[in-house]
View (cartoon, rainbow, N blue to C red):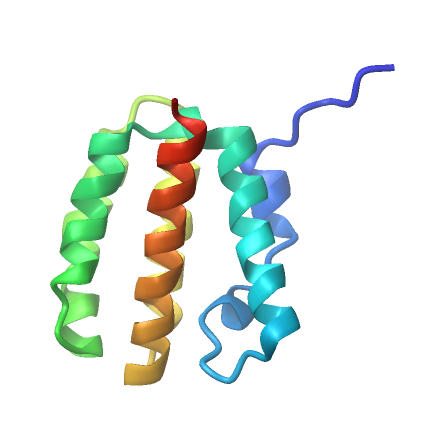
Length: 127
């Protein structure tokens, strides 16, 4: 019997968002985080285009502090609203939710690392 493809919602329901941006992750938690992102992108990389993802990443990468990151949320919400598919809206919401829980400079650094990982795996699986 063929295994059904997990939807972005099913995958994201299994992710502990706080754990993703925890700056005190040990090696096994870091590997687990990377594996979760890889699984999400492998199965759902078509949910959002590479260009859209790069645009979001550019906004996040340019945030110099947590306050500036939070000021990017409305712009990313606009990108989310423009998405046509439900899967892409859910994917962008995942990013907005990560922004929402980012509270410290250490978490900001971890969040940027997660976004780099997302972009890298999106590029890998999008080929």
